[in-house]
Structures are given as C-alpha cells and as structure tokens.
Amino acid sequence: MGHILHDWDIDRKRTLLSKAFEAVPSGGAVIVYDAVIDDERRENVFGLLMSLNMLIETTGGFGYTGADCQGWMRECGFGKTRVEQLIGPDSMVIGIK
Image (cartoon, rainbow, N blue to C red; front, side, top):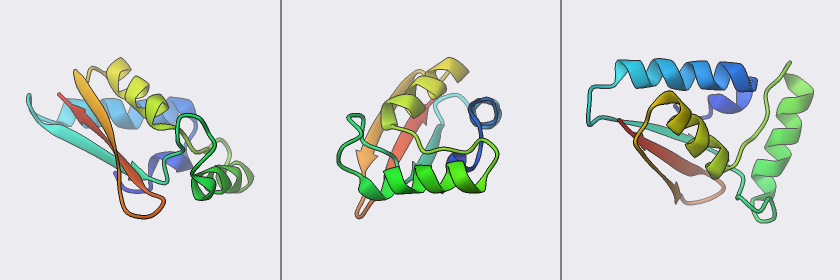
C-alpha cells in the first residue's frame, strides 16, 4: 500500500489492513510505504506536514508513526512487523503473516 493509509480515519486504516491480512497467504507480507512520522515526532517534517494536510483535506485522514502502523498490523493478526527507512521522507512498515 503506497501512500494510501494517510487518507483514512483510524477505523478505515484498520479495515484496510485487516483485508490485506486476509488476502495474504501464510508467510506472506504486506508492505505499507508512506511519509511515516518518526516515533518521537521530531525528525520527519515532511510527514508531519503531510499529516496536517490530510487533517485539512480529508474527513479523518492523518499521518502516523511506524509504531502506530505496527500496532494496527498486530491488531489485525500480523505476527512480525518492522519499520525500514527509505530514501527521502518515506519509510515502509512490513507486516508478516
């Protein structure tokens, strides 16, 4: 899921991740990449501004931290999760079923 989850409220984020979990075979992975906000909310200025933008432009969308996304993934059933920084403001959160 690339630049998708920030558009939605918390319930829709969880629904999308749950549907992805159901669709992935055992041992498979889901990768979410976005302008993920750092857990301390101090470094990724682009991600923080994107979150503000989503709050203005959507009826519930907002940016999120890697820890937030990992928590939602675990709630949906993913067993292992991790966050990896990419080049620029994006990171990916990986959930393994």
